[in-house]
Image 1: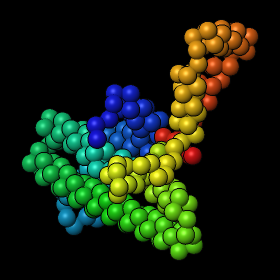
Image 2: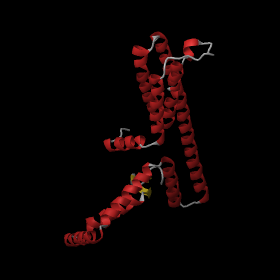
Image 3: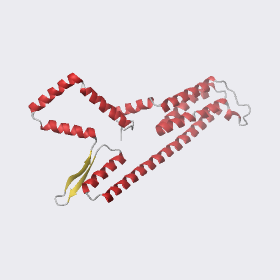
Image 4: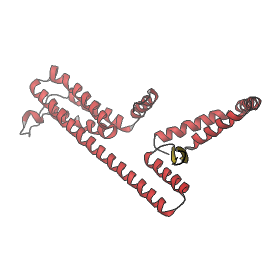
Length: 251
């Protein structure tokens, strides 16, 4: 499902203000400074030579922000961090390093290791999400089975089952229709809606059946109340905070 521009903007703002994002930025910055501002020295006790030089170790350290980005922002975040790390390392290998061939080998090795780490973390995250989804669905099925065995009233069973299904699917509203065998028409058997949806539906229904003069009086009364109290601003702020809490999975 494609996100709307407003949803994308909210998602980008949420990422930019998160702690993992700034941890990745800080690690990339520190490692870049070490990579470019330190001299070309080697570890004296290293038996492997060039692959354990100072800058080779720093190239391996670039894998750490890739892993953090993948944990926090899934595969896309890890791949973006991998691409940034490669772009950061390339200028030194091309124009500064006294051994460009070894530098390119080290960059390629770090990129392959980083991609493998990203793949493992993403596979583990997907497996965990599928496991949680399966548990949620099994819990919903078990709850519906318990409801069916406890009650013989159809309406009560349908309402309780619909509530469990909405809870498992994280949906805002739902309806169950029953097929009338005689008329072959669907009849509404159960429904559940969010409080805001019900309030809005009731208000629009009442306004739709009011005569014009009553509607005009109600509009004038609301206008006076708004002018004296500013209640609509509080209502709008309440709705805004509610949906922000829903987006952040607080409610």
